[in-house]
Length: 103
Image (cartoon, rainbow, N blue to C red; front, side):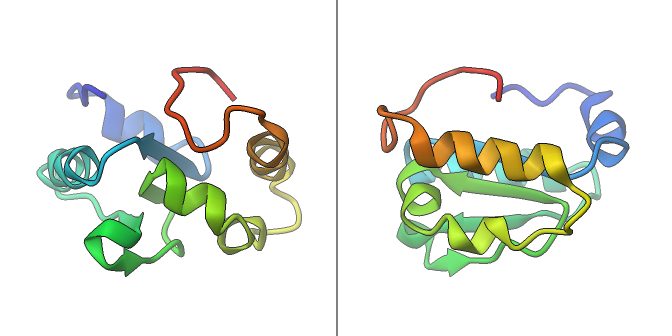
């Protein structure tokens, strides 16, 4: 993932964002880049010992998220697009592997 200068503004305006990486080092690195803009985000990664998913933006490891989807399905009832994305993750035959794909 590359975080460009205008990304934080766009992310703030678009509801919840889940940024997935397949290794904990990338989760941590991407989270640090985002925080460098002065923005807050949670980390959901067992490898990093953090399972937080309350904030608007969450950086997580694929395996931790797929194994704990219930932590993400409890979002606001009117956030249908977020719920659809979680349902697609549940049904994905490739769950547990990193894949660049728009949800």
